[in-house]
Figure 1 (tube, rainbow, N blue to C red):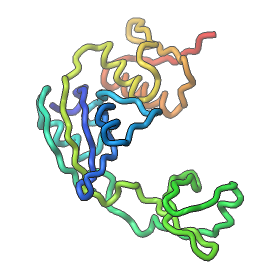
Figure 2 (figure 1 turned 180 degrees about the vertical axis):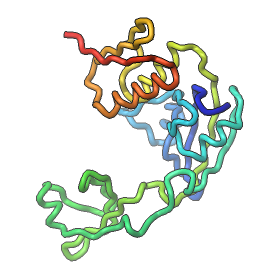
Figure 3 (figure 1 turned 30 degrees about the vertical axis):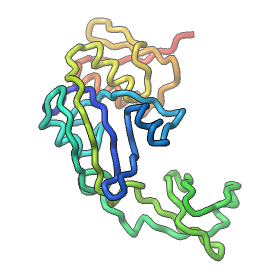
Figure 4 (figure 1 turned 90 degrees about the vertical axis):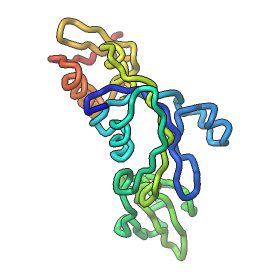
Length: 213
């Protein structure tokens, strides 16, 4: 496998130290382990190697594998979510939460200053917030399988649209132009990324997003 390859994978991601599953594509495993999320979408995912669709350490090992191969991969913090940084732990007045009608409590994940943070403690009118990624500083273990390498052009288009939450069957090809129908509103950042990927990997000259009424 190499950069630019489209592949379909399935995996279970665990924290090495505790064995806790933090991500899984198999709905059956999620239910068995009591971590099933009704709002989550389960099933194999399609990615493009070299485009940071998965963490660096996992991607490096996927390039060494073949279609149909399954492997257990250990990924260090340096090649996943980074090491914990004390600078990302801050203490703020509890009054900041009162303005948002939020009652702070240890363990609660909150939006604060356009960033997510986990509350570590609440004491004497002060709230200690941790802005580090929840998996920062952790060695991760992925049990991953490459189901197949994707070769079909339409399936590649669907892969990109689906990854960025833009549906997968709402497109038309007109010569070198791809037209994507917005059945639901797609934010501008996602549109830019979708267009970038489609032009780079499928050589479209132009990508149009249209709404039907």
